[in-house]
Amino acid sequence: MSRGEREATELCPECKDPAQRAAATRGAAAPAAGAARRRPRSAAPRGAGLGLGVTVGCGEAGSRSRGNHGSQFPPIDAAARALVAYINGGAACAAPGRCACEAMAGLTGTRPAAPRRCGSAAAFLLLLFTVQAAQKADFSGDSTAATINHSLTLLQRLQELLQSGNGSDSVLRVRSAASDEPKVFHTHQLLLSLQSEVFESLLRNQSVVTLYEPPETAALFEKFIRYLYCGGVSILLHQAIPMHQLASKYRVWGLQRGVAEYMRTHLASESSQGHVVGWYHYAVRVGDAALQESCLQFLAWNLSAVLGSAEWGSVSVELLLLLLERSDLVLHSELELYTAVEGWLSRRQPEAPVAERVLRAIRYPMIAPSQLFRLQAQSAVLARHRAAVQDLLFQAFQFHAASPLHFAKYFDVNCSMFLPRNYLAPSWGSQWVITNPARDDRSTSFQTQLGPSSHDAGKRVTWNVLFSPRWLPVSLRPVYSDAVAGAIQPVRIEDGRPRLVITPAMSSPDFAGVSFQKTVLVGVRQQGRVLVKHAYSFHQSSDEAADFLAHADLQKRTSEYLIDNSLHLHIIIKPVYHSLIKVKK
Image (cartoon, rainbow, N blue to C red; front, side, top):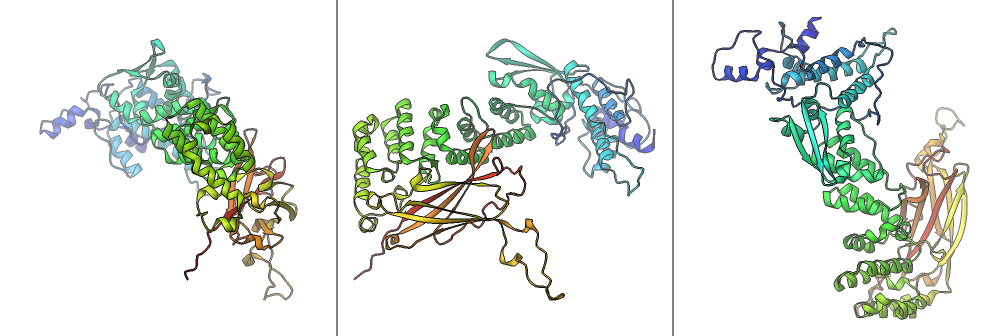
């Protein structure tokens, strides 16, 4: 064994026996070298901050095959064998040289671990740094150099260690209300303590621990323990919340972050009962603001799909009110939203103040007068709470009866009640599917209503739309070079970016008191469904969105923004009314 290997593995007497260090501190005579006792198994090393790499996951069922090595360990497995030997209660290594904790401190640039646990922590540090050294060594350009990496073999043996329970020094008994018999896991204190400070504390003075878990988390506890050994786990949609609960309860922060990221990236996945609403409510309970916002944005941009699903009935009052406050809801019409809210109120039967608050969040001026008359005559919910919304209904009829210019003289139209949402009905915009969008520039035109007021029902506005896949800003356009006459600077295709320009094809005095907000929805296919991925909004003062598809690579047929090599857009024109400026006489 080389000098470096001895320094990395040998333990000083104080590290081998914590009692000896304590005695030395009290001024007692130090025992003779080599008489140190082996540390009891119940004193597991902490090793805080270390963990098995989460980028490498173990399979659901581990293989017992040891490859082509037979009974011979590959060179890097000497460290793994040392770890396994320690877990199995291996022999002490008493030899002259520096203490392993000091050697590891010199290698990592950190202070030595606590004397009580430095020996085992050093053993595991040796394992990790041996793998890192094999992967990251700089060979200074030597063409004969090669990297020998057996990290997957190590992970396989750790999984086998969990399955067989060989050398186990701790037992976890997991009880659940769903079963009279506890689940028993023969584990290794070192590996659990390295991943979880909660397990480190639980196993500090005892080797058998009884844990009580709800049925949902108890069913996943085996997967959870496997992650602690192998650093990888596979989960399904319905397992995300209980796995996140386990990671949070036992403070396995890497797993907690991984599950939260899984939830944010699988909102579009299709499930029979729906999952986004449940994930939002869970994010509120645990205080995950990023997951809350992701769920809320997905629900807003794909509300029509949610309204017709089973999870609409599980929406809480708080979530419903948050959605009704938003102007970026994507749905067919305000009438569709009222119908869904009416069904929710009928099923949930909330108290009268809650029901009235929900009904007052509906934007009745966006519903045609004929439909409002029908609701007043046929809606049982509206009849029951008519007094709470009578003023809003009356104001909506006034809005439809007068010209917006005249209406704005007497009422404040700068409020959400008169601001349209993102309606998909043909009178509000048009869908545009651009086949092979990277090929060349395209243009189209369509018509929308001048405004939602019935007074303007017969008035239309024509819009021209230009799409360019490779528009170049002025700073990047070709210019003549001063060095060589007639030569131009080369321009790469990737220097351009997609551009969408929307302009009215006409001007009219009817535009007085109203401006137009343009919203462009970009649809993508996720998990077999076409959903809204982005929504770009810009006002009349600007004819285009500055960051439209700024990060989309439309040159690739495999781009996530393309569905069957086509770009799916839906353009919505939203009239926004303005109060007239009153001049003082």
